Length: 211
Ligand code: ADP
Image 1: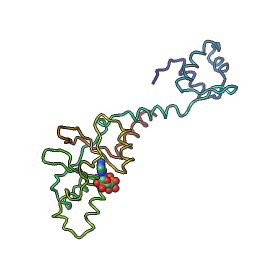
Image 2: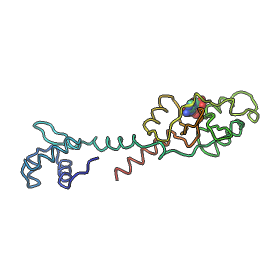
Image 3: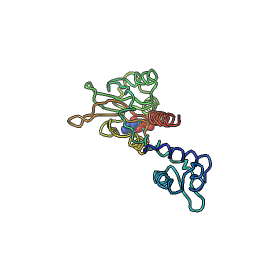
Image 4: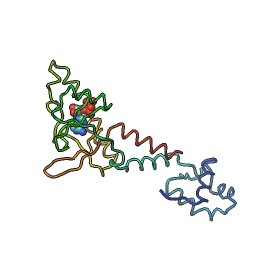
């Protein structure tokens, strides 16, 4: 974002209050000549703060700030917004996984092996599906019902929230495990990104900017 000068801020304020307004009228309000204003008006138009229409004048571009906020939002890194992953060992029973889901108040659990490497994803629907049969949920390990590697869609800490949002929408899933790749195609689980995380980050950025 370009830092505006005091005069450019004054011009913006005048156009916000009075637009559409001609360059001549703005100049009069500031007791300046039209020529003295020209560079400032050029900067404000090029930067997108103002729009200009021939024979109508300058008017304030309401979308400009929203666009800037959106731009800032999508460049945020996953690592700054990721939440703690809630994990279970892959030998955990479906029954205990359901209890864990309620205790932790999350929608998705991640299964890890004994070294903390990502092994599977267990969503609400996976648990519901498993519960529909008359199987003994105490005996059934989550490893039987989970989505496994290599089918898990993951994200790296240095990817952006935009990439995370795209992956979730394109794959119809609610969350992504945040992972660091290690040797032999193994992934160390370091966090999770959910649709809620994205919505929260969006709200934070929008609210911060509008104050
Ligand atoms: P829910 O089942 O509660 O609607 P999801 O939409 O996230 O939650 O999950 C739908 C299916 O996709 C489930 O079978 C789940 O195991 C799987 N799944 C969830 N997250 C991922 C992911 N990151 N990568 C691959 N599969 C996933």
